[in-house]
Length: 75
Image (cartoon, rainbow, N blue to C red; front, side):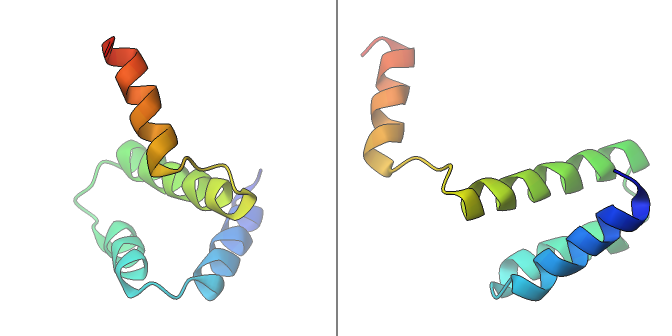
């Protein structure tokens, strides 16, 4: 994916987003020049993946998450 496509995808996601907290996080991520560029890219990539997962319904209910956590902890 080239930078033009990424920018278009980010613009589209921002336009759809109504949660001011999420928008503030994205704004801070993009304006913090002190962040390591690799870290900045990694965080942005994770945020976009999370948004796609939510849009696609790839989420756990609280009960599913608790069950998965209990299994991983051997409870």
